Length: 93
Image (cartoon, rainbow, N blue to C red; front, side, top):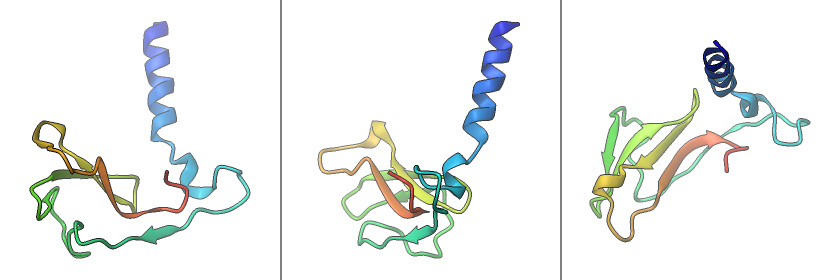
């Protein structure tokens, strides 16, 4: 039963977008910031996966409102960035 409680508590903690409303200091609201790069897909791209011009493959993820592309590890090669940030809260690191 303790295992189930711990898993439930961990799941609830991970589900909370704690940093979405406040910066690390707790005093400022985080805002969405949009980034641009030749490696990023167009802003209107809605697919789950993206392949960059240099054949690095990524999967879309992020908190609600964010778009962060994470490298698909088994297709990675030298020169691929671990993640591409397209739109993220200002507290994202």
